[in-house]
Length: 192
Length: 181
Image: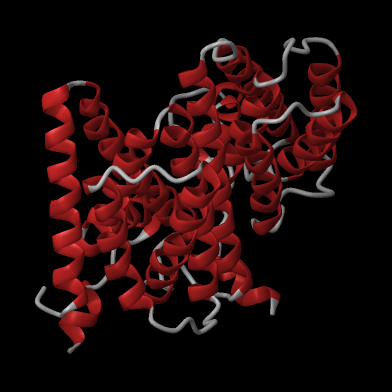
């Protein structure tokens, strides 16, 4: 059962751009992995929609958890997460964004934790040599933090502008729709 | 036969999946008119509906798509799709303004038919994730196109144009319903 599903979801390990340093290649990893982009976008929109914008605990929870998860990846304990898992996380995040309701702080922290674990464990590196692996994963950590919280900060500007709030909710519904379709493809073993 | 089979959704990889998904909703006129009608009707119903309907539609459509991909049978899909053009077009043409929840239910019911058809027609995407991204973006852009057109209703002359657009959508749906198109 697992094999065909994995085949249906060829997982893009770290895409290396020739001439770029390991650090830079690690930093762009979330951008070139659509499943990770969905999770990052969902989490960023969720964080940005909170009024007032919470700038203390969520970044700490996200960054520390992602660092631990990436550490486990560096140690070879993980490296790849079954793709429907990040899609299911994105589905929840997108759903909350689409609802447009305030979320309890503890739940926001929980989402940060779960997303960071999934993203960190899903960032396996095929580069040879532990120094290169370490540099790449440090880059990934910076990339994830920067991408998530810069997007959150940018989307927080939407609060107070009805049309922009609506736009964020529409993006949330798109994330839900994409995730739902991918889950359907994966759980039926179709696609690829 | 081989050539036909190979040419259908044969693009490989993520880019192929994205392009395939992006093009799929715009290749069927019955789908296009209904998507545009959702935005158009939302634009007519006012600010809340303008944004609520395009939030509801993709989520319910994806649910219908999931049913289609999973092979769950749904009766009268093609009739439902054609009927969506007729009903939504008439809503716009006659400026029908029901409560938001009623509009949401109407749009949601039709979204299931559209999603189911897409899910059944295209279970084999080159890359499911990028296919889904392209598919949802294209659907959303059609809604936004409808909203933009619907905003013309702010002006007296625009109301006529928008209602005429609704009538054209209803007629198109009717032609699909009767099998003329």
